[in-house]
Length: 139
Image (tube, rainbow, N blue to C red; front, side, top):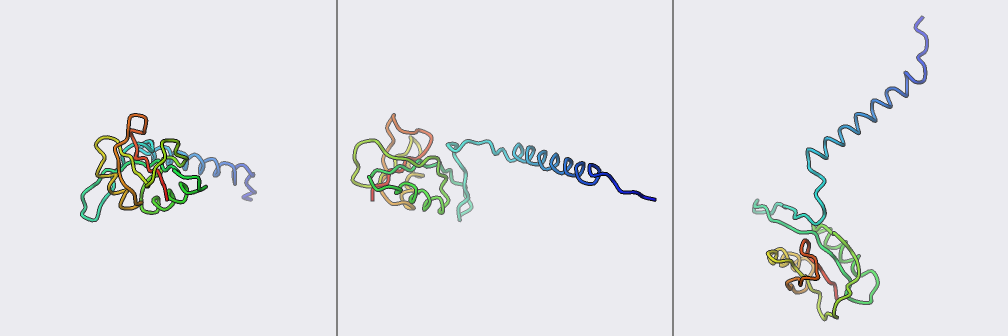
């Protein structure tokens, strides 16, 4: 007579083994893929030519009183492949045109963002992020 196995042998032991296996795979997978890079770290993306191009995360700030403008813009450029670091409100001097502020050495990347989001580019001053592009939306 084979008898019935207990609940712990039928369900609990396999469940513990499955959870431990998935947890272990997730842990080692993140280590192998180095997924701990912060959102302000430059990102390497492939282009149609096959040459890698460095990219930066984007701070999207609303430069108007129109509620939700930064979030809508962030969603639009995110669909075009840009990494969004922060969405918020701009508190600097009033701007007449959407402006992308870039840290030293990242003018070309700012031009790429301007092509996707519109607006002009300008070098970021010392009070602005030096590890991300800052897009101030004025529409």
